[in-house]
Every structure is written in C-alpha cells, then in structure tokens.
Length: 416
Image (cartoon, rainbow, N blue to C red; front, side):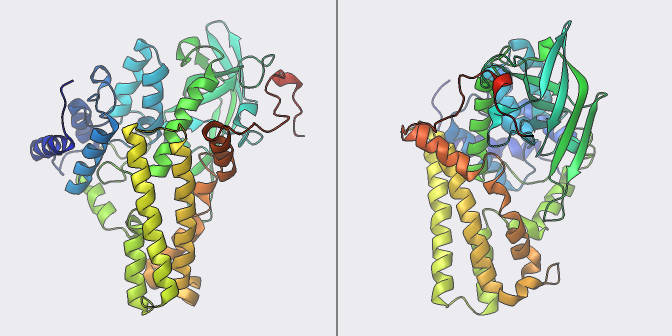
C-alpha cells in the first residue's frame, strides 16, 4: 500500500467518524459499521477486514478514536487474541468463518489454556482430545478463564498425543462453548467481582475442521496468542471508550452505544489505568500531602514508569530493534507500576484506606487498586515466568535443568 502518515490516518479516522458515529444506534449496528470500515482491527490485512496498517498507524487509529470519545471496537479476547492468531495460523476457510464475526462483535471468545495443574507450566496441560470419526472428544478442566461466562467460542489447548513430549502433543482448537458437556463456574476475586471462571469439559465435541494451525502444532500457535497477550497486557492501550462486550450472552448488542459512553465517562473506575498518576496527584492535593517529599518522589517515580512503558511499547510496535521479548518486559513493568501505584495511593490516604465504597475518600478507587493489583502479576503468565522467558530468549541464558523437554507426556511425574 502507498505510504501514509500517522497524521493522515488520524485525519481519515476523524473524517469517517464525522459521518459514521451516532450515539443513538445499537452497539451491533456501530460495530458492523466499524468492521466494514477496517478500523475495528486495522493491523489485519484488508482481505481479512483490516487496513493492513503497521503498528504505528494502528496506534494512530486507537488514539484518534479515544480522543473523540466514541465506543471502540468489540474489545475482548476475540479481537485481542483470537483474530490475530487465526490470521497467522488459520486456513482461509477458518479466517473467513471466524474473523468477521469477531470484528462485528457477533461472537465473544475466551481463552481455554491454564489448568489447575498446568499454569506456569502450560505445556504440562492434561485436557485430552481423543479422535472419534471426524470429531475430537474433549475432556478436562480449565481455570482462570476470563469472560468465559459470556463467550461463544474458546481458544482451546488440548493434548492429542500423550506419547509425544509435552510441547509436541498439543493441538489448538476453535471450541464452541454452547454445547452439552461444558459448564462455566465463576471465580470470585478480592474485588468482589468474577472476572475469571473455571470451565469443566466432559466429553464435549469439536470437529477436526476446527483445528487451528495443524494437528499437534498447538504449542507454536499458542505462542502467537501468548506473545500478543503479553504485549497487550503491557501496553494499556485502548481503541475508543466504552465497556460494551461482544457476543449475545453479554446482552449489550441491542443497547445503544450512547449508553456505554455515559457509563464509561461517568464511572470512577475509569481513573484506574492511564489516568492513575493524575488521579493520585489530585488525591494528594485534596488530602494536603502533595508537598510531602516522599509523596512527591513516589508520584514522580510513577509518572516515569508510566512514560517509560509507553515509549517501550511504541518502540516494540514499530518493530525496530526487536529483542523478541518486548511484550514480556512490558508486562513486567506494568505489574511493577501497579504495585507502586498501590503503595503510593495508600500512603496518600492513610487510615482512610480502611473505609471502602463510594462514600470513602477517593470514592474507593485506591481500595479497588489495592485489591486488584496482585492479579496482573499472575494472569497472562506470572512475573517469574516472564523473567525466565526474558533470560532464556532475550539474554541467551541456559534453560533450567530437568525440564523434561524430550520425555513423553505420559511418562512425566504428575501431581497427586
């Protein structure tokens, strides 16, 4: 495609929004317009519903939509993880089947990777898939499944060859969630919400045609998903505003997009994220401790961490001077930044932190941040796993001894 600047992209997006944005239409109608424009996932090739943009131009699209305050694309694991994975590894038929329904929000997706006995050691997963004619019969348990209660489809890793080493006998499936043998149970967190779920699969079925990337090649496909996930978790970026969820189960498709703009901009929770430094600085002024040198030093450190991570992700997205572990480093820095924000926030509010709720100092935002902050250091790969990846893939250090990489899965020691 012809060279185009980020400024031109922003102008194009704004011109399109002038004619396309209408807060009175439904979420489904808006996402259909957004998908047709190519702006729902601009890095995808035009043949798959994108714009074929490089990373810097995709960021320009996100920034332009965010600046206008419109509801963004059908965000969720479908758009964030499934679409780029299927674009990279799926067949043309699979790309034509799944990606359009992700872009227009028709289907919501979840990630069926982690298991009670296979979290940090993901390749040790035990969910089994046994061939029965032109289908696989799936039995196993998954855990920490974000959005599983709303998902229509899952990115499922299952073991198809227990006689192969653990990394080599895994297959990646597009798994339909609405079928007999699938039970989703919420997992309540310290925040009081149930962002995660556990999923029990008892002899559910998936067609052979739903294999993504080839039989027993699931580990390579999963690494694409994980790479995108870690980069996304570290970036903190968004495309537009709004908390509308894709898929029919969430119940958002028939509501108007204007409702979600009001909900997002009117919610105190929106201050958690990119506006954390600004929120904590305002809180320090309100409590009269903004001139405390310890507080000022902490706020300056937090601002520095936020800016460093932003520029690191901009460099990673540009593809320049890649070390192949930018996403891992970004996730590590993000979790560290969240921990520091928690510490500084509680220094600012002091004993007031014991009172939670809308009537508390800060409206409960610091308390929310306090109980939420441990999560990102665990989900999407723990900090310890990220450091191992950086050391081995980025620094070339030797792998840990005794990792059983050549031992058949069925011969590996098992817990319990």
